[in-house]
Image 1 (cartoon, one colour):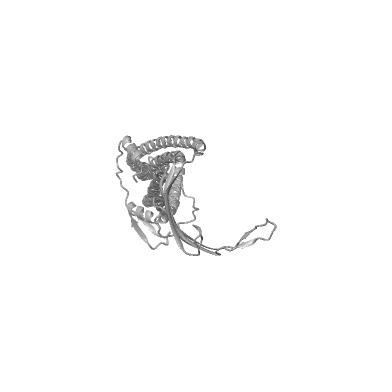
Image 2 (cartoon, rainbow, N blue to C red; image 1 turned 90 degrees about the vertical axis):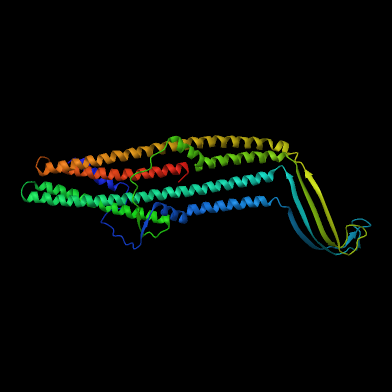
Length: 444
């Protein structure tokens, strides 16, 4: 038998497993969960910490929008004072002479309220509200992106588990076939028609398959734990995925996926909103050289009356209202470099947005081609399985008719198992590529 084939059989199933193998670990789980991928997504959405964090961020951004809108209302305050005053010393004969004491009213009270209503401030308030709304939109996009990412991560773990379960079924069936074949070879050896070395070679291959079965069982437990963590289930729960779809969705035209990506891609729209933020920032900087106008009023009660002469120890009230306006002249020269910096920031964000668009186009093209390639790989793998099974049937007949060697028989058996694994892996990979393409285009 081709030695490289034997090495491949051992390496094929062990790839990706880092656990030491001393024997099959018996599962102790009591709960079995039969679940579809859509149900797994729903559970992952409910238990994902990243999704919950993004939801909280969106809630914070929404409250900041409301807070910015509240600044349209006037500023209203109340205040009060209670004071003690001393007599006023009067130095009639100079600072170094003894002063006479001028009696005053010693206790002073004052309570009142004031109001300020911003009428115009260079449109800064409207720009601040627009900026808060943009940040809120970005937080919502990031929340949707987190949901899409967790869907793809869940799908990958789900498909890995599904693949390992299929591999387990394949290896179990292959072990049963090999044990049956070993019985036949032992019978031939007993009759003296085959060598003892043939029996030993078949037993060795059977041992390797049983060792590979242990690795697959461990892979199932690892994938189950990963999926349980995503769904918020106990680590010991046993997950049974739904059957794989043997007919993956046929790919559409590349232009269709690109149009969907430009309409729904999360990085693309985040970059778009970042560019909008830069535009708003430039407008806010330019607003620094605009006038400010507002209405103010104040009303208070006070005791004693010292507003008009002669003073008297009685309560009085006073209310004032008016308009005030100001213009920041110094901003005419202080603001020059701020505007230039804001313009450069906007140009940078516009260039970044174009770069993001290029990356999205590249990712869509790569995912589209890989998905199309995976569908071709399925068709090739299906043909390979049929050819390997027919070849194994022919070699088995010729071996037991003493016209081929045991190495030919073992090699044919390995090819059958290899092609079956490749077919199962190709079908799972096609599903994974499909979900990756949906994640990139923003519709997962």
